[in-house]
Length: 383
Image (cartoon, rainbow, N blue to C red):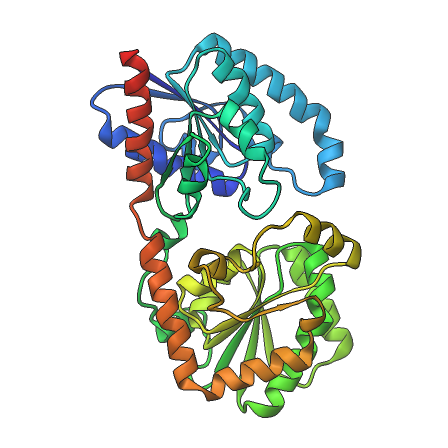
């Protein structure tokens, strides 16, 4: 029997790991046992979870500090179990702080280790790569340029594609999603992605509201949609808009972000993964972000890339206009969106770049990842 151990720390990792489990089961001609820490999707595919994944699904400094005793208890316990279990391979899915520690201890014990999704060493704190190399035998990468970064330090890495590129269809039927969400077909819909964190929504609420106001003055028949992934962040924006009584038409939606993007004509997106999601949905957009001065000063000392938007980072050039810090203001952003609305050629050029991006990232990630994992195990068995 092939023994594979995995640890996923949150919902996105649970999804990635469950897909990888299915691909390994399809490729391996024999019985496989999957154990470790995982969520419902993994367990639905035959995974046995030794601990609750929710213990590791903690975000925010205060929350992490409060949960630290329990996290450390789980870390010690699962490490002891893994060393006794002696899997043929261990796969850490994201959760780098937790998983790299586990990977290091297991590799020292002679167990092959894999990490799925590279931390952003290409953006900041590059020197982490040397600790990663000591802990991990194989890195599975979701961006094409990451593979070469690891190869330069003599570490095995494989680009297997971005999971979102597989999840999002190449050609978006905008009308279909408007009907799905019961949105009007005759309006110009602009989706406003203000972030998934409380701090982000608080810092951008006023700027985005004023931007919408200026856009509505120049683009008739506009509807602004604000999608949110949590009731808490939705409530923050709802309270702000109710208090300030904006003179533009808007709607707030919960847990329908991707469908809302697909239903829109244009998007204003906070920097982050959602900017890549918007690009893969082929929607003309801008990227904005605003942080406090001290955080900006700290990041400028550490960040080593020219762009913050993931579409631009992957393309190696600015295909989406970035409005950061002082540039993230209502005048500049509204002026750009209005120009984009009135310039069909400019919108088409951006969409063409998004198609190129989608094709670059569109790989059969789980199948390729499973093949790489099984190859690694095979090499170990032959030793």
